[in-house]
Length: 325
Length: 266
Image (cartoon, rainbow over all chains, first blue to last red; front, side, top):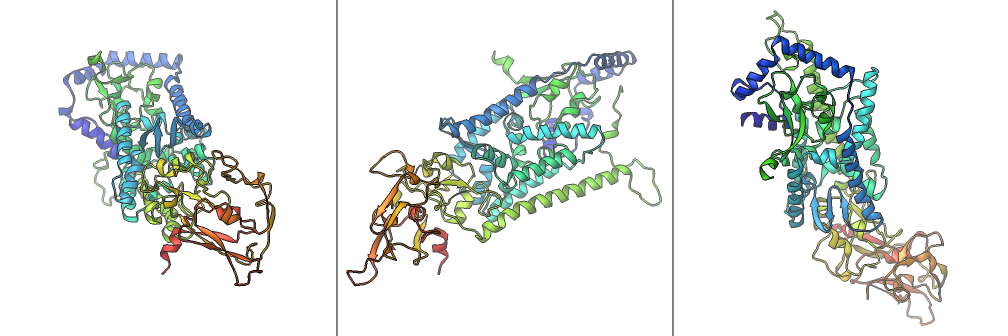
């Protein structure tokens, strides 16, 4: 329980830590001890050397995700341009076959600013919360959010530049996101206006796709510039309160990425590709609390770590599915 | 590479042996920088978001809001910026404000001169589409709308005021605006540029007004030979802007004052 709360805490910005003595299961402790035996260490080194010799590159989940982002956003665009009324609206609020959907954070801002609980928004928000709880909270980020896709491309450029020594990543405190979430909600209440929407790249990109380009896109370009040259995944990692709200919605989601301690070689390939690497701290030697473990609540279920892990130690898992079937 | 030593652990105390003067380690310095950077970023972002709020707060630029819009401040609070009102409008009168325009990024407005809301949809579709009630659901008929009110802003430019007729295209052949010409096509709005007029006395604002009894032409003097007429706006006016769109004078002789103006006047 304490360990789970720690995972929630990390989402709000606390630093990752090793599990305490009382938080590690006996099985995990035995396994870690076994892994540290000299001959096991040698075997691991050998396996890693083999991996480096014959690297396996997989982009399976990334490709699926990109397709998902593009198709889902195209649905919005096509619905409007060809008037098929499939999904009307934008990502902040929409109707899906007539059913209301509302983004959590946008709806919360509006209700706080307007100081009234709108039934349509409550229905819309509940639909969205349930939907995203089902498929894994921040899956919104990596499977729908159009800004996420742009940011991924910016990240690729950033990594390339970083390798050439032309850019350096500047980290921020992850608690910033929590502070901003509280600040922007308070400001919505105090000013009676959805202040955050002025700088929200998700809304800006989504609307620009559907209703045509706007000058506000320059702000998005600027943010992408920051992510390319100054700070890797700046917005998604440290700022976006929407991401945090989806993280909260999906903290107990059935869809999880499961870590298998036994298969792991602790080489850290997964942490290199992860947008929220603190959730993968468990993959460090001595950080796991159990032999099988769900990675933290902040995980966006993007599957990059699954693609990156040469040993298949990370896998998507639907909690309780084995019991149902 | 067997063990990852706890070098990335956030242990900030007890690394250095007690020195006479406590000097910050590199990691502590880096941490402090990161902290300051984070505070700076937070302040900047909140500041920037307030930049967008300022003109909205001060009502620096006012625009017509779609039919059924709540009082401006409430409307701004309640709008979720999804554009569903934009999608249902048959004449595409509703646009979303851009970030540099100062009336709320992503908030819908109507530029009546470019494309007025002519109620081609009959049942105020935008109101029905609004998920938040920023376009108030208490409205169900076009007659109940109060977007603003028409005003003869440039009487000198008004053709009727000059006693002149009008022949030709009201807004030129490049004008993209649509209007419902009910006697030609009840269901599809048509291009204004496809409809030349030939009028003894220009009465376009009255002729094309979609609301009964909102505007009429009244004599300017008691003299029955005086051809001059003045467009007079009545209480029934909903501020849809059709008169502003169709007015052949350039710039339009008749304009809509958005609702807020009216309410803020003493």
